[in-house]
Image (tube, rainbow, N blue to C red; front, top):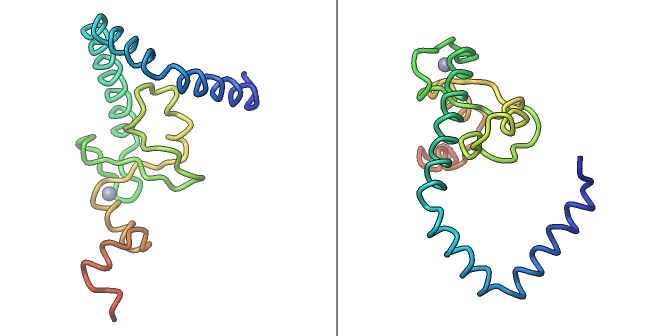
Length: 135
Ligand SMILES: [Zn+2]
């Protein structure tokens, strides 16, 4: 495990080097991408597909915590209920890395998720649209 200080130092050095040689980095990156476009895209697509399969399996296995729905993974969401949300589960490409974030969530179907969000007043936009704040 790398310490946070070491990681910060490493990242700050990288940022410094990037700033100093911005144009060179951009050129090198563009060249690399041009040379590796097919393999790079294929690996990304493969990782994404594998991740989605694992996430869908997890969602279908657990089902909605409120109503038990488990027919289709597309209608099942990861609902953050514990701890602080760092990022959306669907933004991950690696299931093992996503597990820490998944552990903060429960699976909830889109209907139950919408109702829970509305009732907990987590999304102020809905209340404004429905003029609930005026009364
Ligand atoms: Zn439900």
